Amino acid sequence: MAIEDFDVVVAGGGPAGSTLAALTAMRGHKVLVLEKERFPRYQIGESLLPSTVHGVCRLLGLTEELAEAGFTVKRGGTFRWGATPEPWTFSFSVSPHISGPTSFAYQVERSRFDELLLNNARRKGAEVREECAVTEVIEGEEGRAAGVRYTTADGAEHEVRAQFVVDASGNRSRLHSKVGGERKYSDFFRSLALFGYFEGGKRLAAPNSGNILSVAFDSGWFWYIPLSPTLTSVGAVVRRELAEKIQGDREKAMTALIAECPLISEYLADATRVTSGPYGELRIRKDYSYHQTSFWRPGMILIGDAACFVDPVFSSGVHLATYSGLLAARSINSVLSGDLDEKAALTEFEARYRREYGVFYEFLVSFYEMHRDEESYFWQAKKVTRNNHTELESFVDLVGGVSSGEQALTSSTSGRLRSRSAEFAAAVEEVAASDDGNMVPMFKSTVVKQVMAEGGQVQMRAMLGQDAEPEVPLFPGGLVASPDGMSWQPYRPA
Ligand code: FAD
Image (cartoon, rainbow, N blue to C red; front, side, top):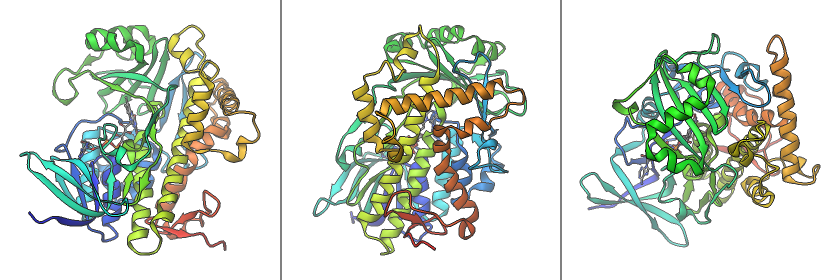
């Protein structure tokens, strides 16, 4: 059989892969997506952030289709977390980065959302082949990846060549190691999640009825995500030592965990667990945080969960997946058009992606540090003070020197994390204590500002295009997005 040639071959048609495929196909490149499953397929990760909806999805031309899909509108997150006994709310509309009509996201059934993105990649010109599992990266000359081998449902083996091989095959990727380096796990975040679906659960009062509700309890924390007026995704994140307990009888384990958490028990008091169809199973996933020490080598790029993952408490997974798809697409578009060399374009991709991952990593460490529970093993293990400083510090340093400017001001990474967390906790207490729910103090805290900043920038560029304020590089000597947001260009100060 003749070997086919493409500009780009993508392993995996999840949010990362389909974003990259669409954005490179829109520039006229010949793109192939190989997806192991047939869509729609189940996936966890249902709570989105605004930058995915109003930034990347707008660039993808999906704004109207998303609005018509009828997904639950998410105005923010409501948390029973930290020192205050009453739940407090983080609302996107107060963020200075994304205020206005785009200050919301969606709660999505991933089977529908992912299919919409993959079909869009097709419409934009990418060829998509489902039930095709990539098995191997083909090596070219001088250490360059040159294509992939894949197997179709009938067991037949195929080979395609491409200038760029993109691994977007998720957390269980079998290709990621081919980029070089290693996958490093963070000890701090090693937990397990047990999750299922319920019909008839209670809703938060309007206007927060579409919010994600996150509730800390002794053994960990719960997510409670309203996917429709009646369907709710409910998951418990617990310490990994409970693995045996939750794997034995999942139903019993779920019932016992719910009983441990009064607020979730109250919300599920009149609900019944879905026991048939794609939502009928109680599933378990490790939610260990990790990152590959390299995100690219000549001819090969990692995006989405294949590259890195950070704890799910702030719904960053799909944001990092689609954001990395956008960054890598800009780099590929710039190289294939002959405007930039590969090293310059992919160094920008990796620096930005690593930085965004690092921003969320630090935010989440602060978020856990803020919760006060002196007795519980789960919460003790999530304290910066109780952790192996060397491990945590070297991980934070590895993920990318998030705030190198400020780093010099504090004696150590853990010192910085603790002071950030204290600042954030104080802001949350101020918000919780205010009569009118004024959230401004929260958006003034360093970690929150950082975590919203780059997403806000992507959103701005997608909405305003040529009219957006000129960007400045994120790193000295770095590149900036082109006015249409689809490639990189050198920075030219006005
Ligand atoms: P995936 O969505 O995993 O897609 C990868 C695709 O590659 C799949 O379709 C797979 O079939 C395909 N594939 C795999 N191997 C091959 C192969 N060899 N060849 C071809 N195709 C292949 N994120 C959020 O944003 N919000 C949340 O609320 C949230 N909650 C989470 C809760 C838990 C417990 C966990 C563990 C994660 C959560 N996430 C959440 C994270 C989210 O699930 C992921 O970050 C997101 O799905 C990553 O997208 P992706 O495109 O990189 O990978």
